[in-house]
Image (cartoon, rainbow, N blue to C red; front, side, top):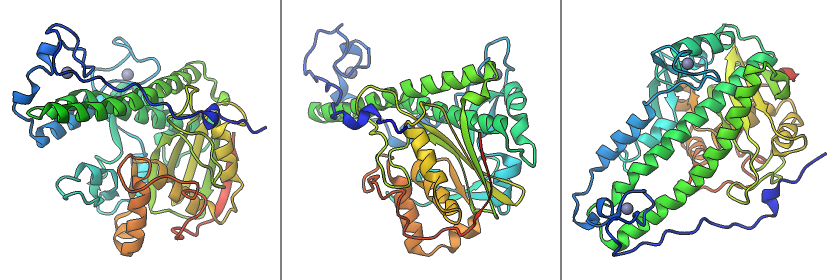
Length: 392
Ligand SMILES: [Zn+2]
Ligand SMILES: [Zn+2]
């Protein structure tokens, strides 16, 4: 039975705003929420030398390089010394299948280049070695845990669907945790600014941070569920749905997302409302041999948003699922890569549409996710059909 997620009935209540103060007692905790004393934080902010934006971006990048192991049994004694660049999309399978001269096109890199490109979003080439990696596992656990899904060809079963989902949720956890750490040093962006400017910058960062903290709490909950299932070898408590297409799509992707609308345009949950935890889905779009596969994995209550989302995907016509999966990856994930010759050959209006869809839900201005995001597609990006399906 279909369950109505509590967020659909809640009003939006934002977190209480900061209360900026021109003068405080010197040893009082600063109004900005940094947990530093006022005298060491905002007292002399206006007179401080502004930080160059390049330096801030470097710090942001270095946060993503601070690795640690996300294996369920990670500990000082269990882990090996070295944290490796773990691939989220299989390097030998998925990435190799779409790479040309060792390169793929990264959409995410376009955001890192946004200042260099004067605000324009321009996806660019990236070496396969660097694509889709994150510093989320020690070398021992990366090999041990993911060996079954790094084999080529990948065998689709309950265990491999679980492992792909585990890696996807670990990736999201790692990226969001690094972003939250970055938010802390972004507090220093207001050096040299007037009190009014300091107030509005801090207020903005405060709202972003509260949203991230909420997201992190959900991610911690999901991650611990996956950890438990892995240790207890209870993969069957996780649902998964895998589809193999009749050929190769020019895109690979890996990550997790909170579904907002399904493929019929039905609203499933409203992220940012209420206090009930949200449902998520893990999504992998990779390949087995010369065929693309999609693997959806989820937990959550029967009839909840995740299961409803899956149902709407499964019920699509088998000729339409490849196109739908393509749009889904672009709409909800940032960890996506295109085949270079495919991307280059797209006419400008399609590139524009893809970039627009890619920006929805990222908070970047211009695109808002709507009930049409996944229920009506302006272009046909793939006409592959479904060859095999597996529901566990
Ligand atoms: Zn402060
Ligand atoms: Zn480890």
